[in-house]
Image 1 (spheres, helix red, strand yellow):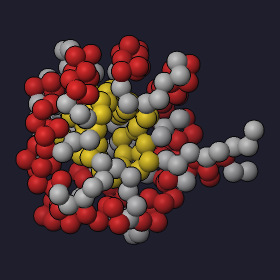
Image 2 (cartoon, rainbow, N blue to C red):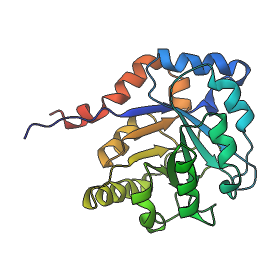
Image 3 (cartoon, rainbow, N blue to C red):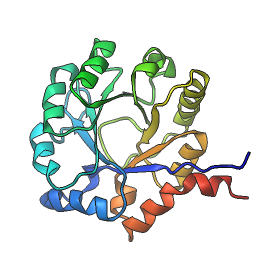
Image 4 (cartoon, one colour):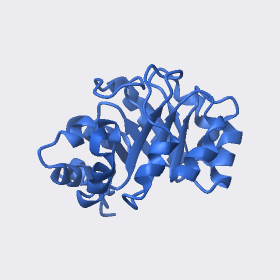
Length: 228
């Protein structure tokens, strides 16, 4: 059977955007071909940094119709699910390490009308998320410790990308496999080769001389990997 390359989804992280003109930055992402917009939410408790909350998401929601991929790096995220969905989150991803009732939170996200995702940190074993894979539409594998942008990519996390692909295929599931942290064209290629379907990245995209060209290249990484 002929090889059919996947179109990789690219989700620029606004953590690396110019916050002084955030609405314009968000609007620009559609013109350069982004698939989703990755929104990192940090509370200063689960991670040692503070970023934005529902108010900012609500304020920029009107600047684009691209899906907001909201990554909650917060302690006890179940307390804030309604606020983020009301603010405009399309995908809402919680951390397996931060939530006491993971199954309940996933169910609540779906009932609120958003798409549920689950994330795990680099040192968290893949087994921590296995029981929930049939209930989610997005698995986000952190390839750096969460909390700050610009950290070096951890290649030991690639095995979890492969584990996710194996579990998805073995159980005939249909969740996206996203990676976040230290992603650039080189590490993104490694992640796609391991099974990733979504690349979330900040610095490598926002600092690219031509973001549109860079995104287009990333979207075709699966094709380039399979080419002789």
